[in-house]
Length: 368
Image: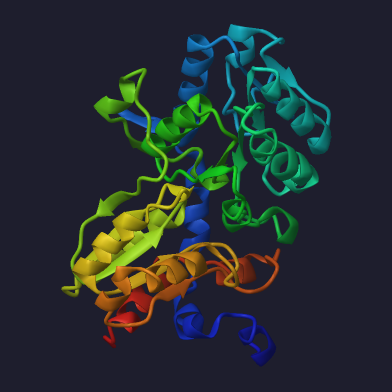
């Protein structure tokens, strides 16, 4: 790797990145074609079930977006909904994010509960004024007179081979905005519970999904079969308990963190993995409690290093009682500080994977 390219990567991660990248990053990206087997459910099906059940429960809930109706959604999340609910409640839109996001916000002000799908949140940049200035702020600016019960959902972050303009992680963008709630599911349980909670919430909610996770199967829990199953906002999940280091992450990197924890366990290192689920509100008490036990914290995200979710967590931990329990500085593992490359080998270098997390955890613990 050239010296120029090396400089694009966040320095604390450099050694780990150079040693870790291999074809496994590409192999993990094709898992989205897996299917349901036995008592399992894909993330796609979990989202579909949540939307279907809430549309059945509440006639004011409706869905709009590009190709959500006749094509069953670009990622088939809305499969079967047009046939069941008809074109008045499942609405195909033109390719104009600013236009249909504005329609959705206005409909929410009028008392309906729109689910506004973006084919990717990269396209939602066309609608950022509708989301932030209209959707998020009007309840406050109207003295609580105008409510905006709306869900903005779609794939977020890196996928595979879609380059710089289609790979951004918007968690920190939306997480900064008062008036928005922001969640990011990892598995099927997260997807169903968070989506249902989002639809029922009286405020604008951003649901940041991941394209490569849609077809991944997870166990179907008994709780998920209940029509009242929700995952509350602001409540993280301990995906794996541990005592030596806390790894806090969200969305697809949760899987990488769990794999890294397995590798660390083989060396006698006990890693606690926290699936944040909710970006805003953030479950700071869960992080503080974990740090008091492990005395180390590492955050993992696929977004850029500057002003990211990990940066915010680091700041809040520094300002909290947990700071006195840290035996080492908080470590942020992020995507590279560069627009996402299109070339497959460079794309693999630009994102943290299992090996990067594993090596950085050992670095934080000062274990060679």
